[in-house]
Length: 241
Length: 241
DNA sequence: CGTCCCGTTGAAGTCTGTCAACATCCGTGG
DNA sequence: CCACGGATGTTGACAGACTTCAACGGGACG
Image (cartoon, rainbow over all chains, first blue to last red; front, top):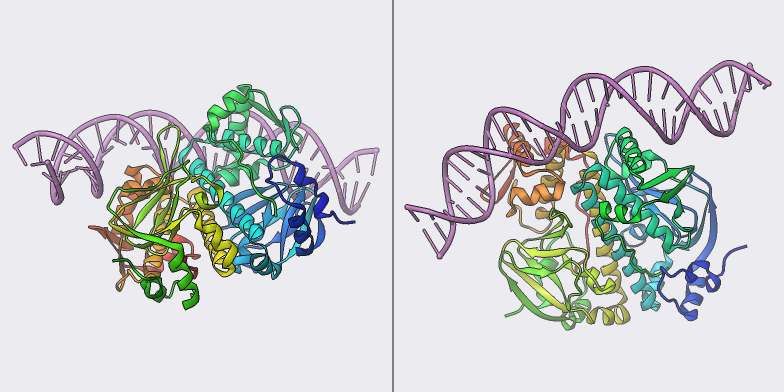
């Protein structure tokens, strides 16, 4: 039982830009199937040319790069609406791996089909470019946070990002949002050690800024969090592919 | 006296993918002019919607973000062939500023024209997406270097990148390449203090890996440099827009 | 000749990483 | 049913990489 693009629940989220019925119809033909992936499933692999591209419908995942010395850099957190595999689609090779962290449902597209999309549906091609630009924007922010901020603020930045993004995809309730990652994941994303990440998180908890237990993030003092995170945490509208 | 796309010298560089005469003709119409910019000229501004987009023809520049606390994160180094302003073109707002560091010559395009490009020339639109993917790939590498490596290796990584890229654009001679940036620029790119950057550079010099004087980088021991930089420094072919 | 920018070097302080130990939870197998 | 190992989270002590502060030299430029 696969989701019809026409009725895709993501289209109802305010985060995403409009998407005409005609376009939905085209995307439906572009779509080759739907996929379920359990925690730990490898969806895309760094350095390889995947035959398929995805759009995350539900669940969360992780994008990361492994370095030659065995360390890991997390380059992004996958949330519903994310388009995965653009690099494979247009460059022929992924720069990072993508892995499911929770159970996920994904739209599956054929890599070859992306060319038809560019040739026949310029608005959709534009949407793909738009998503690439959003990704570039995010990575710039991440680089700034990792490069310029102290650990305490890095973590605040990451948590603010999570919460805002969860709001955009309708996963947040009041001041809580699901956060199924491990502290190691956060540490690898921010360029911090696991131990230090843990201690700074404890500090944020002690200071009444937020708490994070059993996979649920709760913001207790949004104002202070945003101040630590350094404003720019408003989440931008984006297209859906 | 403006350059004709048909005869664009960049097309002869091995770094760039093929580009048919017919496509060159279209780009020629897309192009609205040519621009000279001296050192320090602001080309694009973070947070603003620029009416024009650029492709760097010659010279070098800097992409950076300013943070609320006044610190600066350099998110990229502009070299010939780089397309500037994609974010403004498709998202309506730049996530970073771009500034000339040397004298630069740039192709100028109209922001509105990018839509025609998507509508009428899918191969060119694909090239734009390709460039966006290359940029995302680079930022992922940069994030990994900044997040996971010690200072000595970060600098080696950056220098290897510079040299490879200079080779690709035909600016390198033997084992030397122009490097018109300041140590502060490098420090802001790698998330290091100026002082420490200087000391680690001195270390690389002392160890006979490279030297950098008067705006010229010279590699003395490429093997050791690549080892420090962590392989993956091969520069990928890219399209030209 | 003074000023400003850039590069260089030394000393001191601190943020962050490493090492180590322990608690909790959970699935597996005895 | 309980023992066991593995993954995750927590906390303390210590070491060190990196930052900050400070001072100086050289070149470009008005």
